Image (cartoon, rainbow, N blue to C red; front, side, top):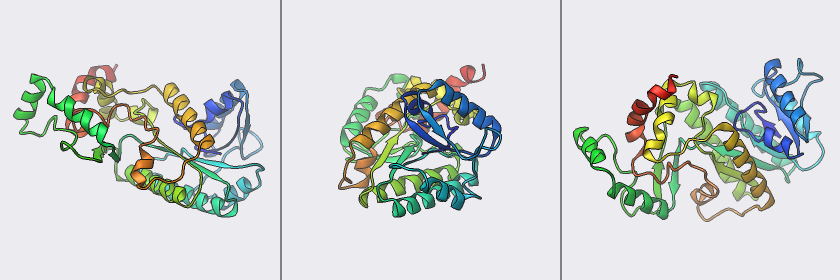
Length: 301
C-alpha cells in the first residue's frame, strides 16, 4: 500500500514493474492518476486505487482518513503500509500525523501488517564509529586550500564532521532551508518505525540517498548545493536509481525481518544509502555554501 502513489521516491514503479500488487493512495488529482496509471500500464503488476476512473481516483488523507481506513481494511492478504507522502509547509507535519494514526489503527486491527518508511538523508542520525574514523582521516588529509578556507572564515567553513573518536558519532545533515515542518514530519515517521519494531511489527526503514527530485531542485539553493556536492565527496542520485535501490531494500527487509536492536539508532543505520554524508570530512552545513557556490552555474542551466 503506497501512500503517496505519485511520489518520485516511492516504490510503486519498481514493484509494478516486478509484477507485484500495489494499492495506491494519493490526492484526487487527475494529472497525478494519469501518470500513475501510465506507470501501471508499462508494468507487469496490478494497481488497485480508490475510485472508478482516473477522473475520480484518489483520496485526501487529511479529510478522508476514516474512509481510507475502511477501504484498506477490506483488501485481502497481508498488508504493507508504505509512507511516501509529501506536502509543503505545515501540511506535511499534519499529513505525517494522519498516516501515523492510520498505521496505529491498521496494525491494531490486523497485527500482521508491516510498515515501510524512507528516511531523508538531510536529518540528524547517530552513526557507527567506523564512519567517524573515515571522516576524521579524510579531515586530517584535507587540502591546503581547505585549511585556508577554514582559517579565513574564523573556523565557520569546512569544520570537521565529528569529534575524533566519537562512537557513535552524530551526523548532523539537517538543512534549515527545508524548514521545521519537514524535520518534524520525518521525525514522526522515525519515531513510529522505532516503536513499531520494538512492539514486534515488521518494519522496513532505510535512509534514502540525496536525490534530484522535483521537490529538492525547486529550491534554488538546494539545487545548486546538490550540483556542487560531488566536490566534497557526496554522491547525488537520480530519481530512477534511488527508487529502484530503495524498492530492493524494501523487499529485502520485508523478506528478512529483524528484531529491534539494543539501541534505536542501530536500526536506523542498517541499509542506509546516505550518499556519503556520514563519511565526508566536513560537517555538511559548513560546506553547503561552498557547494552551492560551485554548483550554481550548473543548477541554473
